[in-house]
Length: 107
Length: 122
Image (cartoon, rainbow over all chains, first blue to last red):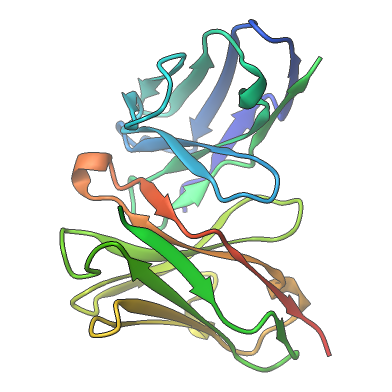
């Protein structure tokens, strides 16, 4: 199985801050990586696919980068609606696996 | 646009079989090169992919659950279903159905149901 790790596990930030979340795969996954945002009681929402492609309708303040084993999700200017938990997910093999999540909360 | 809705019992007894159905609306389950997945999330924990099905009936399962999981599809009803046998308390979770995006979307899960809570308890 490909294991996914994320750091940090949580981050406290203020509106307007730049936030960066890192995801690492236990083996190379090319660019087969997605990022999701999940708010309490809601289903995850796709933000980024193929490591750096912005899903339709997602604000441009979200961006993704990386390939191989190391990936980042960046929120350029944190907005109130961005406080949530963020998950990465590898799609390199059909045994899809998710990272443990990064909670972004209010400082 | 395409929407997904899970349905099924919210309470299942230990050792019994959990059965859920996902109904696809706003489009045909057979259109496009999509797989249809089940994903679960225990309270306060992360996401675990259970398995997926193509409309041809081809399936892939998480090896950790494979011996207990069956996913099937009924294209006439625009539905796909999950059966998880011999459940224990560890199977208590919110269960989501999701569309496994095409290669154009990097096989990401682009559409999700709202989720349904299943509790395993006697």
